[in-house]
Image (cartoon, rainbow, N blue to C red):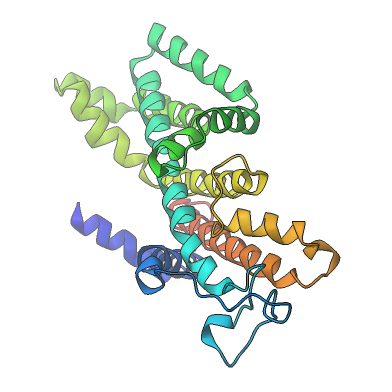
Length: 289
């Protein structure tokens, strides 16, 4: 198992897209983990007409991105806001992926009435307007707890993966290898976790990254809409503040809009490149080495 993981990591590093994506994602994770330790407090100047929405100042490290509406450092705000974005998006992606895997494997391998019930529930979830449902639930609970918020964000995103996993399991279940294992008397648990799940590993990894991407958009969007408890350091809240000060019209708040947007784009670009790299490594139709 360890040898396979090492081999897979080597392949990830050899692929240009996955290598760049992995470096970017790890960079954001490091910022999320150590950002609050390095910058425990917001750095700000004395608010005045000359210090509010200052453009980038090369002479001061804290002000290389400029200042916000209260003369606070945009750089420090982005670094402090990375923790919630990275933590919640990775947790939401994990919850959605685990639910989708469980439902898909059980439905595809057990079949029969269990399959019908689980796929019926999945089809209902797929037809629900996910964003509206999430906004209603978040507005009702008004929570900023990362675990609870992650569960809410994953409430509908597991359904597509569940259907995809079920389709893959149906193909694997009817393969000659699985039939031989059944004849040998191996337990269903052994077949699922030792034969079925490993063959879906790369497929699941790509969907996990997609779920993380969706969670980033959802969380930033919810803070932008103001339905979550206000967090001035969240990138979505910063964008909302910038737009309220006329950044879209080219006002002084343009840097307060630009840099959080770049932070979001950078994180998403890393995730997308990583998913493309994994696909190139595992997909025999496009693999080049």
